Image (cartoon, rainbow, N blue to C red):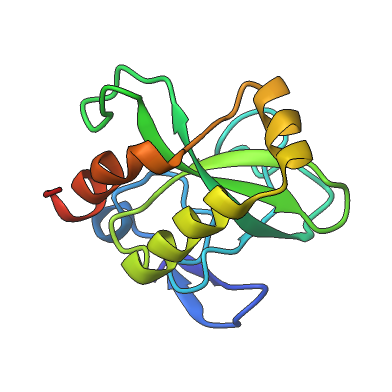
Length: 142
């Protein structure tokens, strides 16, 4: 089995694309935490940092991907616990839906200064009026 152990909750994670629906699995489907492993592009695993990254919000990534919405593809925003680097990662088919809904609420409560900084990086966080589209992405309905 291809996979890894979550650096936060220590559960074994299967990274088979047939289960997760993503080619470069780098976050835990149970707690949504990640590890700072990619340096230049998704899947390169060249970053020496290797610290844990906490899920801090949900964002839209402009995308022509067939799974994107009118706002783009739904992504998890991660913040590195060591170097404060920010990354966005695709949600996966086996991600815990309750955790994703909780992360949406966390996004809405995020400090304004952090929201501004993420916006400056080009990260478009979900807002309250995106809730119907989020439900559609997660559950296939509004």
